[in-house]
Image 1 (spheres, one colour):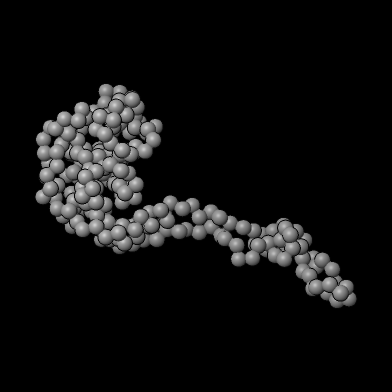
Image 2: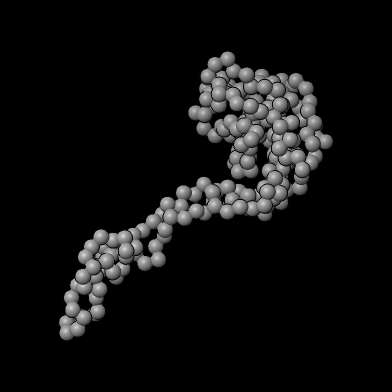
Length: 207
């Protein structure tokens, strides 16, 4: 098991904690991470692009001019896709881009993402993040003290004071264990775990 220092918000060492190899020492495969991130980003796409087809365009259904004798091409009504203001042929329709990959693969990818942060030495464990009041400046001060860059802070339970204090700081995100995901881990430079959250992560990823 890897042993990591547990710091306080002043940056001092408080104790040490062991991180299980089954979660934090998994060989990283970029292809697996790529698939899970692609799944997450695809699910976020709104898929609302749409056009009006011939049947959706308002207008008369009458034939513009007679079929024969004019010397012109045979023409239907004003809603024809060949005319300006007519319907669109083969245009986009509202759709869902979401797709699923196996649960085991998603769980493995989460382990790989956590392992990558430990190997890159960008994983930080702190004993707690207690704030007396909602104050953005206090969170910014802790981030500067711990020398964190674009951190993802993982908490073990709901903490409205911390969540509201950090929401206006660019690049900083506070996430509860149940919401931990591959995209957010990889999208942030530093991963900050509150010590109590480690046991919850173990429980969530237990095979």
